[in-house]
Image 1 (tube, rainbow, N blue to C red):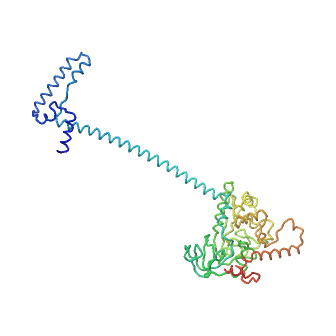
Image 2 (image 1 turned 180 degrees about the horizontal axis):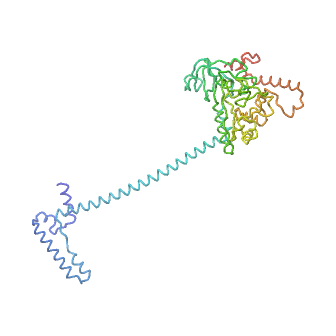
Image 3 (image 1 turned 60 degrees about the horizontal axis):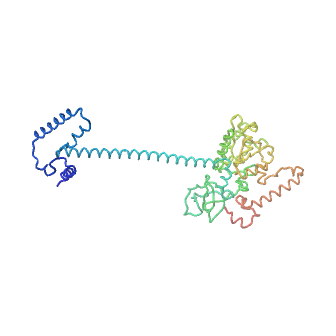
Length: 442
């Protein structure tokens, strides 16, 4: 028996819509006209009964239909079955539609919640980064990035690769061309630890040579010195120092928060710029003068180190002008520059020590710890490095001879303490011990 036939049988057996029952249905043989006549007869009887019982109590009218049974043929049964199936299907579809809408709504809410959480995490991360670069934390941040102290400079004799670690199997950081000067931080396993374009790495010592001139690229206490005594080679072109520029930007942002505008008027100057753009009719194009007002020799300008900046404030007329010392920008620098590793390189009333005229606009990067010590003790760079007598209340009454003797002793002690540093610039220094010479070959 087919599925359709079976369904008819199930319905007929369950409901028994016909008086004859299922078996009687099979033997029934009436024409359509007869069925139509019977239906009309039943309708007429229904109308008649309804009309006669119009004024009868409602329970009597209902009682007339208690035994009334609607007889259905197989076609009507199938139609009824399909109608019920269609109603059930529509109900299921409506339920599915509601579930889909609920699912979509929950998904949208979940996405919004995740987006808000992600935004909160990113905001917290950004706030953390801002806090890390806050001037209050700058000293700690910079100090954590320091390696060992600067020993001196080495010259690349032939093009060579530099590595992340002191071995050729480590990550390559690039290749350095011959003729480049590199900051040298010591020797390890035949490799010099160097800094190139602000990146620390290692290069094989066989590709390097020392600087032979003891009066050039002088490093004392890890600080490169440029003044009347110590100069820079003509081919020394490091460009602007990365760390110095980073610290200046942080300092400028803090100054802006305090209502102070500080901008860079001049930074790195090559040897050629010092020769061609130095002076015109006796006046310096960059506001740079010797203590006696004469021209600064090429190679003796701190700007060639890439560590010095000339600054200007809101009043551009004060560029390279002594009036800058009376500006709010200068006063702010005096009180705050040391926090970011900068010093006023040529301070007032120390022209005889620095060899330069007072330049309130000229600042130099020397690391925050050094700058802080110099600020607290009112020292210029030469005094801090032991290259000049430190003036204070205790030696105001000292005679010239005693001062000269003390200066000699100070310089001797400085040379002893910094023999390791001086070894990079003076290979002929006989006062260095044998161990120091072996350790600092480059």
